[in-house]
Amino acid sequence: MKYKNLEIKDNSIKLNKYQSIHFNFEGLQNKLKEIKFPVLILDTEFFNRSHDFENIKPKLYSEEEKDIVYLMNYSFAKNFNEVLTRNNHKSINSLSIKRKINDDKYDFKNQYQSMIKSFINMCVNKNIRTIIFAGQDNDKKIIEQWINTYKALFKNKKTDLFIFNKDTKSYKLNSFDIYDALEQNLSFSNYSKNGEKFYNEQNLKKGDVDDSIKIRSLKKFFDYTEELHNKYNFKDDNITFLCSRALKLFSLENVSQYEHNKLSKSLKEARSHCYDDVLKILVLIKFLSYIMNKQMGETWASV
Image 1 (tube, rainbow, N blue to C red):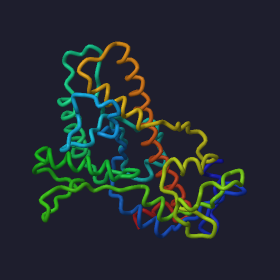
Image 2: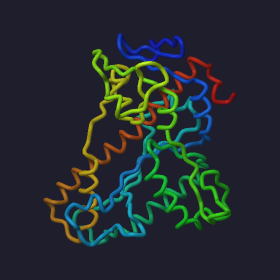
Image 3: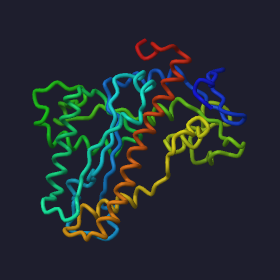
Image 4: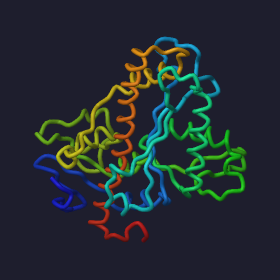
């Protein structure tokens, strides 16, 4: 099924005989209008104590920096229409820590600081006003720690992204969690495409219409809309394990050729996972934008 085949009736679209999605269009419009463009759509991969299965030393994380980002994938967007019409596959870029085999100049701390500074400078120079996440709690906390540590980078520079709180004397990040728009304004009939129960409704919030559920997950959204998004080949990865391999690769003082090859393979899988997560956010935004245009006209975001 393609987007152009979708018909909206009584604020709902029907995907097949069993599956339908009901929209709270007014709520969705109000929520999406909270986004200030230009935006950065972002996903990070990080490691912390929970990934340190082998008690590896030296420790890259600490009580002061509990979560260490080693990979970021991101995409810029000027407006909803850009996400709707462009090739989103080609819009995704990355910042990451790298380690070559037998690299005498490898210094994790220097690379980490450089990556953080590059990210902050990029956001300021691109005049980013909102960062969009899918599940923002950890990522937002990490980036707010960065901007308060490196606030000298944007001193005397105008930015709507980093907001100074006079009471706490610290900066907050202007961010948007796409999960809020998804969960608060869409209700999914609780059936798979084959008519079986899609998910245990006791583990999810009840939807706004009868026999429906709320979804707050990219994986569940794309599982549900499989027929609509079957051209995407999203995989299920054990990202916890992959992050533990990254921790090991970047922590060990000496890494053999064999171990470097093995750990680098896991790092490559983590890169693919992070890329896919950004692409999922972009596709979800594209889907919501298409439905909003169809229901409310292309000027809905500016009304």
